[in-house]
Length: 317
Image 1 (tube, rainbow, N blue to C red):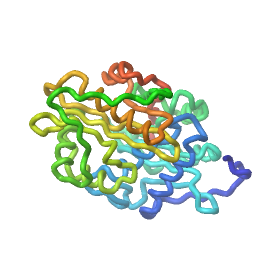
Image 2: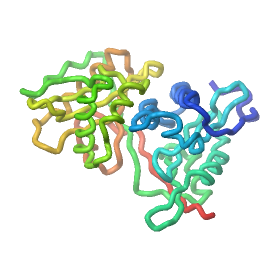
Image 3: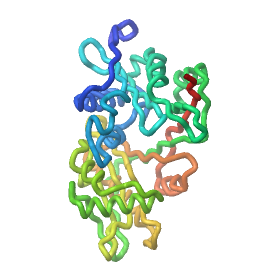
Image 4: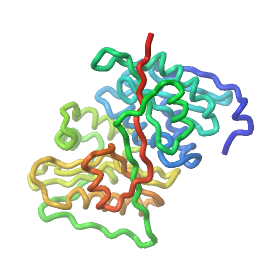
C-alpha cells in the first residue's frame, strides 16, 4: 500500500553499514513484490546469492564495507530503495514503487560511485530496464544512456487445478538433493556449474556458504540428477517465496558430456511439482536473450512474460 505521504516524505540516504542492511533490502523485495509487475525488483534468491554465493560470504567481503551499496531510508527505518552492483560497472535499482521520485538521485549516487573502466579504459555504468518500465527508460535516455544488446527474459509456466505428475528419471540416473554444507556435494555442484556454463571460477566453498547461510536455500528444492558414477549430470536450483507464493528456477544447468535426453526436463518437472505442493501460484525461470536455453524452456511450457535490456553510459570525470 502506498504511504499517504510518499510524495513528500523525508528520505535519508546512507550507505550500507552492517549485515542488518542485507535483511532490510531483502524485506523490501518481499514487501514490494505485488506492488509492480513481476521482477520489477530482484527476487530473493538473486539477492541472497549476491551476498552468500561467494567464497568469502559476508558484509565486508561483498559490499566493500558498505561503500558500494546505497540505501534510501524512511524516518521509521523502512527502506524506500537500494542501489547496488551485481558485477563491476553495473547498478541495479530496487525500489518501493511509491518512491520512484528517488530514482534520479539514486542514479546520481551510482554514477559517482559505481562506474568501472571497460576494455578501452572508458569509465562506464550499466543499468537494467524492463521494456514495460517507461518511466525508467525515459530517465535513462534523458541522462545519455544507450540500450545495449545484452538483455534478459523472464518466463512463467502457469499452474492448473490438476496436480502436476511426478516425472520418471532416465534409467541409471538418480534424483538427489544437495546436502547443505557437504563438501563433496558442493564440489560436484561447482564442477557442474563450471562445465554447464563454460566457466572456471566456481569453487566448492562458495556453494558451502550458499547452502549453509542463504535464507532462500532449501535442500528439498535443489535437485540433481546423479549419474551412475556418482557425478552430477544436471541440476535445477529453486526457491519458494512463501510470502508471495511463487517458485523460481535458478540455476539450471547440465553437463556438456553425454547424458540421456530429458534429464534436465525431468528435474524441472519435479521442481515445478514440488513448489506447487508447497502452495505456489506461479512458477518462473529467467535467462539471457538469445541463449539456446530459451528453446528448451519454451518446449517445457515456460512462456515469456517480461523482456529487458542493459543500458550503458560513459561516465566522464
